[in-house]
Structures are given as structure tokens and as C-alpha cells.
Length: 179
Image 1 (cartoon, one colour):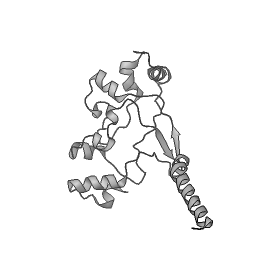
Image 2 (cartoon, helix red, strand yellow; image 1 turned 60 degrees about the vertical axis):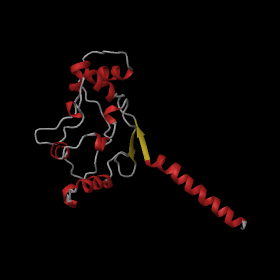
Image 3 (tube, one colour; image 1 turned 60 degrees about the horizontal axis):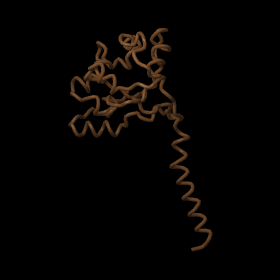
Image 4 (cartoon, one colour; image 1 turned 180 degrees about the vertical axis):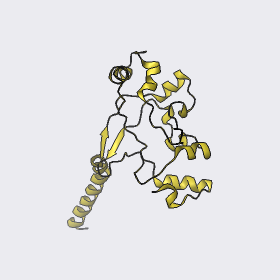
């Protein structure tokens, strides 16, 4: 084999390795959450058994989103422990009455219409079927924003929705999910 082919093969290998290693780091901008939130500890200490105890649906059935800081203030009007995260919660958000600027990993693209009520109430799906073990976690996943699309890297993929619908024999069609 000639030196030209060896150099070419080496160049291709370096380019592929750089693409696999460097491109994802360049594509995604990592951003910190306002403070650490241990779902597991809150579920154990408060006795909440379901995600819906904090993450509620509005009267129209749509997801109400991340709980308001006022919900946290019920227990955290003052610091209960010594954690740095709780100090941030109380000092920066609860006492001044500000909302925590959470970065939402599960945000869907603007052309997707998704109803939590249809999936949880009508279909009876558990939150963990889409959100995994987040409810038993000690920290949120790192938020990574795609620099090109602006969406989080943890957006539920269309193929996961299609697979779930196929397993359950549900045909929503394109317009069932897309606007």
C-alpha cells in the first residue's frame, strides 16, 4: 500500500474521530439549571407518590408546566436544611417572589401538538414511560441547547412516539401530533 493511501486513510480516521468527538461538543451549548433539585429526596420526605402531585394539569387538560415557586414556598419559606441548593431557592426565588428560570429539557418543537392529559388520563401512561427515571433522580440532567435549532438535546424523538403508538395500536396520523 502506498504512503498516499496510508496518509489518506489516516486523514479520514482523524476527520471521523474529530466529527464524532468535537461536533457534538460544538453543536450543543451546556447551560446550568438555577439550582440542583433532587426529585428523589422530595418524593421521600414529602410523601408525594406521583409526579402529578407537583406537576399538574390545568382545567383544560393541558400540562401546567414546572411548579411555581409559590408551591416551593409552602415548605421552604425559610431554609430547612443546610444545602447550597436550598439556600439559592429561598434567597433568590422564594423570599423575593421570583420564579426560578428552569431550562426545560422536554420542550417539543413548535410544530408539535402534545397533550399530557390524553396520554396520562385517557391512555393511562405513567410519566416514566417518556421521562424515564427523572422522578427518582438526585439531579436534573444537564441542559444542552442545540445551537442550530435552539431546542434541548433531550427532546423526545418522533421515532419514540411512533414506536409507542405502534405498540399500542394507536394511529394518530400526521395531523394528530403536528400542526
